[in-house]
Length: 126
Image (cartoon, rainbow, N blue to C red):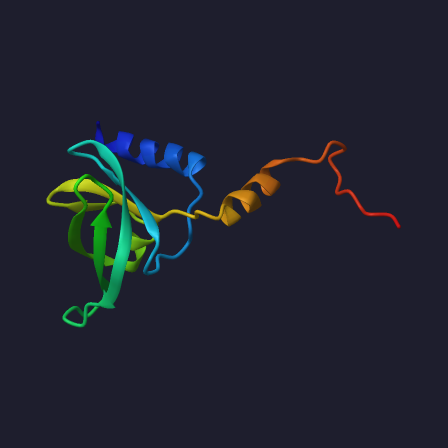
């Protein structure tokens, strides 16, 4: 996967998966890795502010939904943990964003995409 391919893959996935704007404890997150090339889900078990850093960094406890389950701790900035930024870990690109299991963001996006048949807004008449 070339470097620009990672950005293209993330763009395609964002068209298929409904995501949340924020990440909270209990959320299911989708993680895309450049190398090794993989997509996987993890559940956020904890989020704590990393007070050792001056900028806004977060210590995130994760449980990867693999067999067997694997626990890890990642330290990410807000833009990285909300999918606004593709970041590197060990020199390899990563994407991380919370999935909207209720589909609320997807419903809003679909409403914006669908044009009305007449090209005008429909009004309810009583």
